[in-house]
Image (cartoon, rainbow, N blue to C red):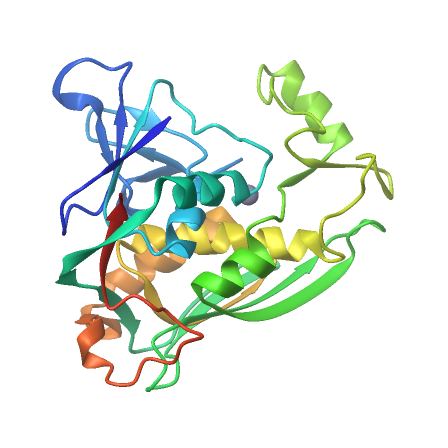
Length: 285
Ligand SMILES: [Zn+2]
């Protein structure tokens, strides 16, 4: 995978370098999400897919990258260590540039809710003077190693990097075995996930955060919500929510044109330092 600089208003585009011709480009947008069962997968009109985009999308959100072209020579974004930290590290090594275009955010104007089974997710308007996304997430696993975890965090570049980006994906040993038998998760190992068996964590070094599981779920949520096409300004609340509910929530938000607006960061006169810092678009240097 390689990330390339892109002009203002390009947005985030995936390009499959193993697919010839015009059909290789897949926009990183919620309305291109085609599968949410194990990860978030995007497809274009020709049916060309790119899977597991959520951790990279979270890194781009956390680094405030608005415009980038992502070339991948296969159908899946590299899993790295199962977190967003390697992507953040590489983006910081490359450097980023401010572009000569105002940064635009998607402001939630009306509450939107999704309830499904025992899971729920909502987006509500944030406070008027704070151009930020706040995430309040609750997970509840019938497993002694995870249990119930709750975390509420206002997402900024600094809070993402210190509180969220190192949290790894996690899975259960029993599921890994079932996935392998159906030909999936071939590269799944203790190198790229927290693996749980019974009530125990199998990784020798244990967890990176005491509540790494809910932090990873927030990471997923940040990545999935960045598929809105602009940074979100509002409050997300989730209870046992996942990729599927995140996408349904965005589709429901966009289905009501009175529930949202896209505005320039210039419209926020006083930008608090702890929230989105960039007032102009940013690209990879
Ligand atoms: Zn994840």
